[in-house]
Structure formats: C-alpha cells, structure tokens
Amino acid sequence: MKHFAIWLMVTLLLAGALHAQDHRFDPPWNTPPVASVAFTVPGIDNVPDLYGDIIDPQLVIFFAGNQFMVIDSLISDFKKEYPQYQRVFAETLPPGILAQQILTGSLVLGNLRIDIKPDIYTAGKGRIDQLRDSFAVVKNYAGNTLAIMVQKGNPKKITRLADLARKDVNVSMPNPAWEGIGKRIEEACVKAGGTQLQQSIMKEKVEKGSTYLTKIHHRETPLRILYKQSDAGPVWFTEAYYQQMLHHPVATVAIPEKENIKASYWAGILKTAPHPQAAKDFLAFLMSDRGQGIYKHFGFTPPEL
Image 1 (tube, rainbow, N blue to C red):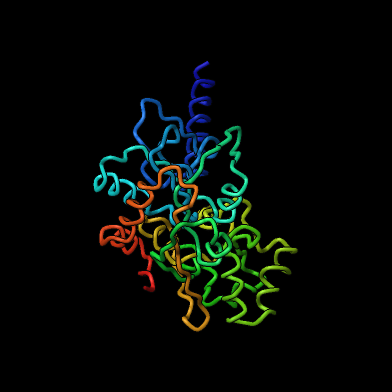
Image 2: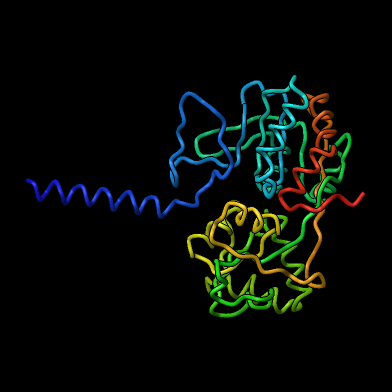
C-alpha cells in the first residue's frame, strides 16, 4: 500500500508537470477581469479574444486580432478618461472573421452564440475599404511592419524570408483566406524572391506539411514556435516584440525595408453603431496623446497623417 501511494503521488506530480509544460505559454496573456468565479483551464476552456462586459455594454469594439496586446491598457485608460463608460466589450479576432460577423450579425464560439453589434471596427486599409459604405467616419491611427519570429537562439539560423523555403525549416504562416497579414506576407515574399519563393512557401511546403497554415488566428504562430512545433513564422513586428516583453523564449529576425511592407490600421465608426457618442469618445481617445502612447509602447508605428 505504501509503494502504491508513493507511485500514485509521483504519477500525479509528473502529470501536473507535463500539464504545466504543455500549456505554460498559453494565453490569455493579458490580465483577465476580476470576477467572483474564475474558470480558465489552459488548453481546454480558454477564450483569449473576447474581453470585458458582453451584457448591456456601453461600447463595443471589434479590433483586428493583432492588437490584443494593447487591450488592457487601452480600455483601462479609456475608462479613466471617460468614467461614464465602464461596461466595454471588445473582440480581437481576425479582421475577416469580424467583417463576416458584422455582415451576418452573429458569431458562434464553441457553444456560445454572440449576437452583438459593434460601434467601432478596426482593420487594415484594404478591409476598411471593402466596408467603406458601412462607416460614418474612419481614421488612420497606427502602423506596423513585418518581422520573422524564431525560437530563442535562432537554432535554424534564419536570416531572411528566403530561408523559410528551406526543406529543414518548419514554418507557421497566417492563412491568407481570412488573415489580412497572410496576404501581406505573400507580398513580402514576392518582393524578396518573386512568385517562386511565394509558391514554394505557400503551396509546395503546405502540400508537404512543412508550412502550417493557421486554423483560427495568427496568434497560433507564437504558440507553435514557443512549443517548438515550428521553427519560424512571419508575424507583425509588434507580435514578436510583445512575446519578448513577456520574456518568452523567442527571437526576432528583421526583414529589410526593401523586402518588407508597411501596414496602416484604421478605425471606423459604424453607421449602425448602437452607442454613437461612446464611439466618438473612444475614437478621440484613440487619437489622443495617451492612446497613441499606448500603441507606441507596444511597438506600433504612428499613423501617416
């Protein structure tokens, strides 16, 4: 009986260690809201892209997913600046998914059906232009560039986009079908090595299984690199920067300006906004020194005014 008890204890400890190791880098990476009951189980019940108060919100914002790192500071400081708004709900899903949600009116996540109208939608210029007739006003508020995220120490010695075509490099790539960044990465690959490089990474290596296309969100790329499922992945510079801010074991490989692209982020107040005054106030805060300072802190470039 004594030996069985010792065996059971060791087994449970090992299982706990394995669980911690398997999910030690899992989101949410932000600070969750305070509640009487917290129920987040890494790898099982974890919804990192829905934030705040979904019941009777005073403001609803759909952020393009690559801005998840600014949400804590941005919404917290907005509430301090405009204390009349305390119930704010935000989503940070891929902009294509958010656009579909706006057009169709709902989103299903697991067993949860979300039927909520946003006041503000933020995305890259291309996606904003597609929905141009839906907005009362739009403003450019930030920018970004691409970088390559690799494992700490860069064991595969990645130095440029062309290295992602190597047979020994497992790549994680945002799916261009719904990720705007995926299309921008393809543009950068064409600049770096022509359509041959783009096809090699995005078609040939996909077919062979050495390029993984994200299934849900480009947030998968940092996780795949952290868990050593992929060697490298093109990301927005801010994503690699943020992982290093968290002291996670990744490194950043810069992409030269001649091979890189510049992204501009735009916010639009929807004509159907349920809370138009709150939307105007948030957009004003976004463009204020404080709002711009938050984006700068997380590595975004200023808008091209």
